Image 1 (cartoon, rainbow, N blue to C red):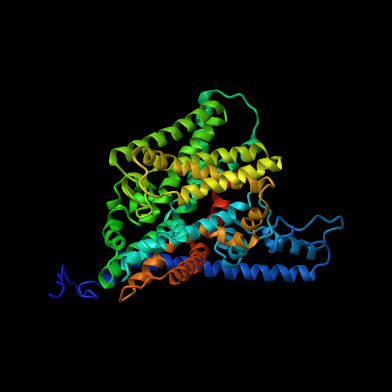
Image 2 (cartoon, one colour):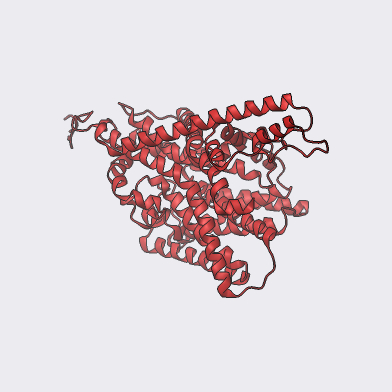
Length: 537
């Protein structure tokens, strides 16, 4: 019997002697950014501690009600309580020392790691939509589980393991992890709608203005809210984008393993990073996409733009806005179904990301969950999160929600046929959002039971607040671990579970660093400097 023939397709030296990391311009940009941010965090933290100690000393020396209004740092309050006693010189000095710092000092304090960490870890605030915190964290765990399998299977030495576990109940849940992203879209829709109507009801003056004046006012308001969102999300996003470019370049020339994402990113990021910065990268072919997991941010920003426009119109023409919103929703269903029929696509467990470029990442096929989220946000606002339900209705609601979720995730068996495939792909994302909508509405209206207790656990609040950075970071963690291997991995069920939770914990630990350096200071600065926030003060 003849031995098997082996064909060598190519060879390359590792590490590549022609590559030098010191010739990469993005390296020096990152060094400057990290140095400046690190210096600002150090200065802000030191200044924060000095002010805190000084004010504590003043409070100890001065008798009377010279305390802050419950804040842990007295200099963040508007001053001590009013006293009916005549003010002495020492009292005046204490008041001056506990007054709010000037604008420059406030900006410096925005970089304080101590204050920002306390804000992230604060669990004292009551949140009417507390269940959203748990849903964010669990959804990201689901995302990480799916990405772990996606990145790990290609470099395994027992590729038959995938076919073996595809029939497992747990693996089917992981394989259909695309619905986890629909949960994020849904939650975004809930928040934008709920916050908009809540703020509108507070500032509603009932003035009958002309359409022209409404357009002028809405244009200014749109620019304000959109710029706030853009400035809030972009700094950590661009930082991770630069790290991704440098990471992909280094591993492309130094890693033994071959990763298609790195092959693409090391060539596309230098040329097409600006598409990411404008959140329009999903409007172009996936072969030109940099940082492929950023497709979610692009779609979410595009949905946010559409949602804000419809919400602004609803202030004067509510029926028109509702009609337009559902027209977009039905158009999304129809467009998706047509694409599925024309491409003869069959959804399956084996290929959960089939037709990524045509279906998976395109905004016109993923709009449904965001629209359902906006509807849920409106319902929660109009009812003030108080809906009395009969116990039978609550039981039926939970039963339907669980059944719908189970069928969507575990119902892909055999060939569905052209029509059923088109219906499943077109409607499944919206159906998932409806099932999740029940969970949110039930939990926020007192009908969530133990589910609400789990999702609203306060120890999940800090994780929820850094989930955005964890989403940005987690693929870099996976790629870095895999590309440091010098041999294939041998997969097993137990080891995969350990790896998933290892990535989960590591991603959140690194995301805390990114949040303290970029996200949290940006939010604090915007709360001080942005016109919308200054108007609310």
